Image (cartoon, rainbow, N blue to C red; front, top):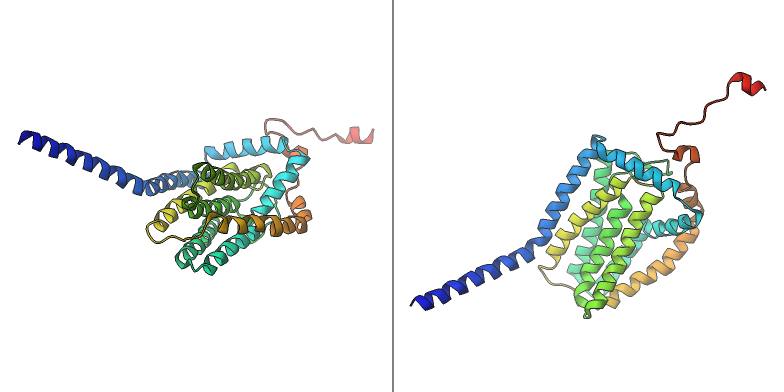
Length: 289
């Protein structure tokens, strides 16, 4: 009796443990989204009040502008062009079309709603925060505002959601890891290019990363609760890579000059750290001599 009771108790404890484990696994995206939301709100409050984070922003901006080189400018301008609104829109449309052709209606709806929603949320926050960029980048309208970074948010959501869709379709573990690293590595490189080129403050990019994390966690968790698509990973990856190479290559070439002008480094005098005084203006007597 006691033995059977002990066995029953052990079994019950084991089942409770497994149940809590599965519950945690099924809810961990929401926990991560809540953590990202809390951190995002802290940064947003700091940005609105010009708190200590702004001093870090200025330090990072000035140091990176001093370290800029022509060859690295060329590379990261290309990267930032491949991650701009035009390319995100084209890639999103190509993937949506592929999903619609295969009649993956639910996946196509999640894809379009998530990417469109991310863009709308980012724009709404920008319009309310109204934070200026580090320099004049020839942007207009809502795109002239800085927080959070639109490039960072849109690319992390785009390639992060793509990874969520294709991850279950890749059988080999090594291939899965390489695919995720390549996709997310490119998105993070786009984010880094925004800071290097002086288009955003560091906190803008950090805010974009946290915002995209929230969106991906919630969208991914909801997506896997229902029917998923039956396409192979290549059916989605090949169109994306082809779009980047063909349309992206033409886009980079066509808009090269305007982007070079937009991301031209500021004058050396503007890059000097604040503790260095500008050169003294010569007096009238000196000018006459």
